[in-house]
Image (cartoon, rainbow, N blue to C red; front, side, top):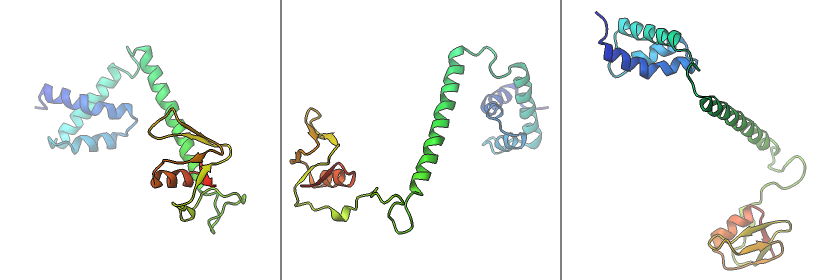
Amino acid sequence: MGLHHSTLKAAVALYAILLTQGKTEAEIKEAISSDEKEFKASEVEEIYAAILEQAKDNPPGKDQPDWVAKVLASNEAVIASNRELVSALENFSTIQTSNGSPENGHQLKIDVADFDGEAEYVVSEGKSFRHPNDFSKEFKAGTPVKGLAVEKLKSLYVQGLIEKA
């Protein structure tokens, strides 16, 4: 007899997106068969056939506003940018040699063990930052750093923004 038309319509609405995402027939059928409604094999086939019929009658992009295409293209650009960033970060992490020092001889990471909570600190040359609670107050290169919590000083030290006076 087949599925009730409302059940079929709901299942198509739920699983048709998988086809537009490029999923294979087996992946779509697997998703349908794992539905909480526990569709039988014949019902899975019926739903999949209805998905294909809908895709034939209403191909992606038909009656789609221009802004949708722009958003999708923008999303693709963001995804590509994110992949480049991940790749760059992975490459950056391989710069250091096995003994922990960078290949180029420059220190990339400041050891927190070198931090002395009792010492006086100044803003590092070429660096600046703003007070965490009062953005109108800016600490510029060479300026003594006072009035900040030890944990904040430690964070600034590890980032290379401040150094011992």
